[in-house]
Length: 263
Image 1 (cartoon, one colour):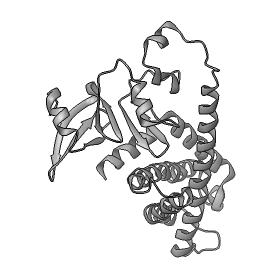
Image 2 (cartoon, rainbow, N blue to C red; image 1 turned 30 degrees about the vertical axis):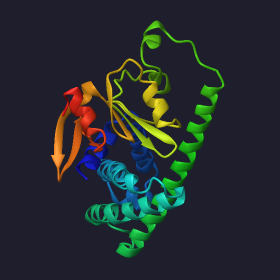
Image 3 (cartoon, helix red, strand yellow; image 1 turned 60 degrees about the vertical axis):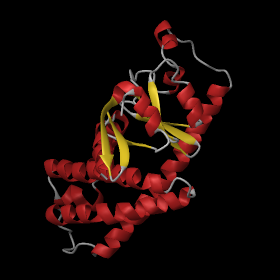
């Protein structure tokens, strides 16, 4: 759970999420849902929607990161359903309490809490499902396009870096901290962002040629220079890496890491 909190906090600082959040706040202030444009002053509207929007991004990331390891083999709709239930449980009390404190309904009454929870669950399910479908299709299209040989010209600096860097944002300086297998995708983590690529884990690791890295588990690779600490808990070994995440070390890999002097 601590790793999920760290990841959720990082999500708020990512440019994509921050830009989307600011646009959502602006749209909410302009359109004034739930009569907020008539019951709140402009500064209060900005404050109200900032908490709602940024809080939803934080909690959505928290829920997804915490549940993801337990749902990798479930169908997409079941993953979206589980995420929406988690969102309803965690976000509804925050949003309802914040609304109760700031917004005075014009008819004098606030929606019953159970209906509020149901609304959050339904809206969350629609967003999570749409996001999964859109991201999967966009990334698949990009992956297929890259395999077609339509590779843009590379600068000498780009040529010198490991091949996996060609699959992340051109303006992301890296370094790539870790790689995690997620079904038919891999998550590639840099200090700036997290990229989900349709790529086999073994191929992703192979494309980090020239970088001193460690396979700690059948689903995890970390750059050696990104390892901050080694932690033990209930007989298990974890590597604490630069992004704040704890990466598990399988029993099979412990002797290998001991030989490298890391453990």
